[in-house]
Image (cartoon, one colour):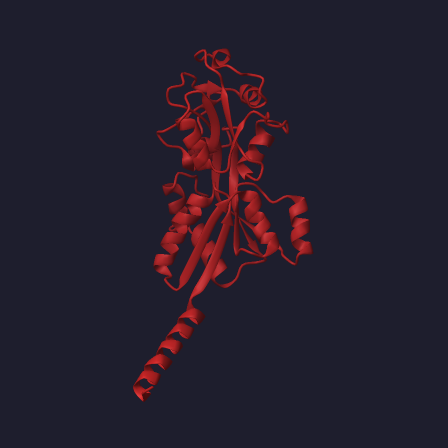
Length: 271
């Protein structure tokens, strides 16, 4: 092999080594509710910081917090607060979860646009999800069976719904369980008899939002607490964040940057 070829190969090795050293990777896992925020902010952040590569996946709030406990993510997204038993597991595993409130949200019950029902009370929603109400006629709608669409138990959205609507009663076994907000939207949009619930940021024209006790889920009613199924959204870090992690968190919390993007994806900003 000639000296010139050896020199070129050496340069290539140096280049590959240098790019691997200076490239930074940030891993984000968890809530599908927080997912649109993380994706939108990550896209903007990487444009400003091209040396940072961000990997994002959903899977539910429980999975995001589990990844913090296991040390397999830098940031865990959650649409609920961490539980005491999860904190205990994290500490036993040498991790110290630190929460950052990044946005506000409300959980909106949705039906097919062809459904004539526009408003339900918390009590009616509870009866539907317990399987006590089986026909829309009992709720002022057409004589059609009610098809209940719910989230799976690893979902933070499910846990907030269970607490604020179900009052710790379990969703009845006949409910169709979905793994994400997007899957709930699709299931309801395709079934005239269905009812589901989603984060505000997933609301679109393919489904119809119901008011709850006559109150519409919106930015205003979320911030003033009048909508009864409201909540904060979180990003958790493994200990107090440093380096690229704290830089990203600060970007999310910035009124001029991340919080503007929170509003763009349909959620309620902190400011």
